[in-house]
Image 1 (tube, rainbow, N blue to C red):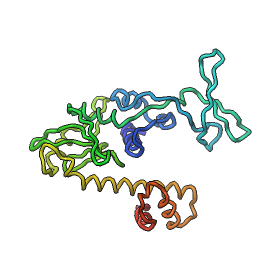
Image 2 (cartoon, rainbow, N blue to C red):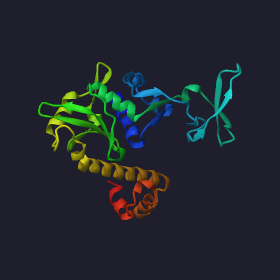
Image 3 (cartoon, one colour):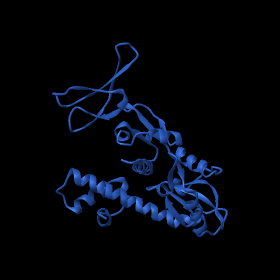
Image 4 (spheres, rainbow, N blue to C red):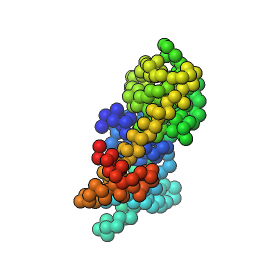
Length: 260
């Protein structure tokens, strides 16, 4: 995996789940130096030790709770998981595998504001789905730049938006933003008030929210199909309709979107 792939993966974690704990199993697939790059930017901070890890005892890699015991010196800690297979029993877990990193929306939002030299607002709008970052000046107008946080993370100004990942770039090994692209967003987005734009972006926000809901349906469909591969599409849609992510939609509505 290249660093660009790790960036996209990290943003997807935050966009889907809100503040996230990034486990060792995920980080180990990233390229060398990725953690340092993310920590230097302030995206990631060391978190608490994992309470559950993938058992390395066999190829099943079952997620199991971690058991901690004092080391022989009375200070060091030994970690184990109890494998259900009696051939393996208690499996030792290296302490490095317990390490987790914390990614929060506030850390990311403040990084965006700092890179663009904005006076960070931090005000939440539209039920928390929009986070004000600060006022950005283009060549034609100034508009409030917001971060859309439901589903795919996106930068919103007036009636326009761009995926956040498209604006992120690497300069001399450090994470940065394409400021020209963001100023272009500000200049080309329609707005009724040059000083304050979130109210004019509500339609675009609703589109993003709907797209995020449909993507969650597709994610649940893939998971169900993996567990129960021989069931009908109607059955899959009925199961998803019982979940919170259905938002009260009928199975037929879900069925039409879950395979796109």
